[in-house]
Each structure stands twice: as C-alpha cells, then as structure tokens.
Image (cartoon, rainbow, N blue to C red; front, side):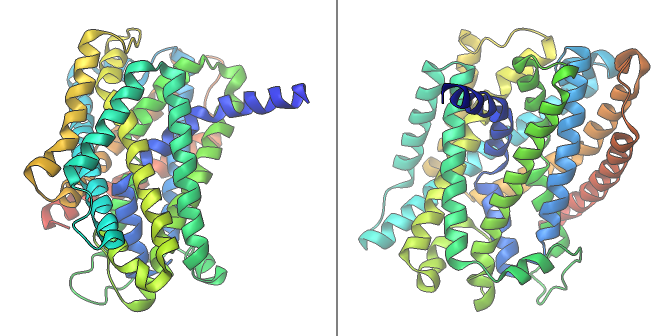
Length: 416
C-alpha cells in the first residue's frame, strides 16, 4: 500500500505542470468562446478544439525540449539567439494579453455571480465589486503565503473543481454521442444570419487554447522540474495528459450550450447569457454546476496571470524566480488591481477579452518559427536532433498558426 501511494504521489507531482497549463488556458474568455460556438453551431466545431489541442501539444513538447537542451527558459534563449528588440516585443504583447485578461476575466466572473445570485434571491444579487474584491484578496493571499509548489497544488484543486463542474453539467444536457463524433469532421459552418462569423469564432477558439502565454510559462515549469532528456517521455506524457483533459473540458463547455441553447435557436455572446437562459431549459442544478465551473475557471486563470510579469522578467534576465522579492510583489499586486477596473468603472469585459485574444494568435507564428529553428540547430540539439515526426508536426503547426493569425487580424479590424 505505501508503495502504491508513493507511485500515485509521484504521478500527481509529474502532471502538475500540465495542470498549470489547463488552469491558464481555461478561463472565462475560453468559456465564452466555447459556449458561443455551442450555441451557434452545436458540436460542429469540435474539430477546432481537437486541432488546437494537438498543435498546442506539439508546441509544448518542442518548447520543453528547447528548455531541456539549453538549460535556459524561452525568453532568455530567444534574447540570446534573436536579439533583445524582438524578445521585448513578445514580452510586451504577452503583458498586454495578461492585463486585458485579468480585467475581462474578473469582470465576467463578477457579472455571472451577480446574475446568478439575483436569480436565486429575486433581488439585486451580490454586487460585482464585492465578488471582484473577494476573489482578488483570496488569490493574493494564496500568493503571499505560498511557494511555487504550493501555487501548483492550489491551482490543481481549482482545475479539478472546474473540470468536474463543467463535465457534470454537460452530462445533464449534452447532445447525443453521434452528434459529438460528427463534429470531429473539419468544416466551416454556413452562417444563418449576417451577425454570425464562424471564421472569427474559430480564430478565437484557437487563440484561447493555443496561447503564447501558456507556452512561455511552460518553459519556466520545465526548468523548475529539472527535467532532462532522460525524462523526455515524461514531458510528452505530461503534455498529452494536459491537452486531452483540456479538450474534454472545452468540449463539455460547448456541449452545455449545444444541448440547450442551440436546440432552441438562441445565440450566446457572453458567459452571463448562459446563466440567464440555461435554467429554464436545463434546471437549477445544471446552472449551479455551470456557474461553479465559470468561477473556478476565473480563479484558475487569474492565479498564474498575476505571476506572469515577474516570471517574464526573470526569464528574460536568466535570473532565479524569487517571488518574494519586493519588486515582484508590487508587480503582482498592481496586476491584480486590474481585475477591479470593470466592477468600479464599468465597461464591456467580454469585448476586452475578445480584443486581447487577438494578440496571442498574431505572435504565435513567431513563437513557432523561433522554436523550430532553435531545436534544429546542431549547436543546441547536439546528440538529440528532432525526429522527422517532430519536424513535420512543427511545419503543420506553423501553417496552422499563420492561418489562425490571418483570421485573428480580420476579426480584429472587423470588430468580430
């Protein structure tokens, strides 16, 4: 029994970096995109999730390999290989995504809590500023008292809560299995009215899954784990586990909308719309599960977003990530305060999220190209050159990222 417990503990610790990725990827912006896809097109865009998860896995493996081979984190390697200006450009793009995401995520989560509690009580509901302030204090408290491994374990708990909530809700309302399987066949749905933009929605779904921020922080986690090429199989397994679970949770969110709103012909553009319309169709239990999932998704994505600034600076400079440094603590607090902007001053958190999501796809081709070049260099690869399969995978990933970047550019200027 002790031996089996020890093996289970080692397995759980080995997948914590993957769990961290899931917590980063699935936030309220992701929930909004997946719910909108399910409400507008049923499960017909499941293939988008499958491809985005696959290509994210390829990039995660490639960047993990680069970190193992060089012993350095991504931004530090990029700076040494391609220069400071382009690396700083990537950092500024990621910082823009980070702060916009914090603003939008907390705004959406507090709106959802107010709407849900209003339905339950028949009154005004919990004020948005109360929810935002409570969430901010909770997460800052976790940061203040914890170390890196504590962060990972806390995030793992939130991800588990989020996954169970969404899958539970999907089981209650999901369409039949055949419909889900048919959605794995790639096709772009034909819009049924002028307001629909399936191409833009596809770009948003990919942007929320294949996020540059996640790839940068993955390198930090790999270095923190101390993985070597002898652990490469564990690296691949960890990423595959995370991307599989990511696909399942995102599909569950889509199924929640496809099994209810799509059948009723009701579109959804915001996560709060799900709360307003799900209960008459699926009952209060499904709504409670969905709201719980949204709140857990918000907390799990906000937590690592607070840390991104200090992590990027440490990464760029090649310094130890000491999160207790006063400068870093100030940066974390300032980033957290962005979550209070919408509750205090108003604004459209969903629009903020959607605009910020265009940044990640736009710099993704650069990330893919840089990583592919570096892992192929003999001076870096040495006795571990990439396999033909990895070369092919990186080539297809680059093509896919260029296509997605073009969709993101069009969607940004069209306001879609």
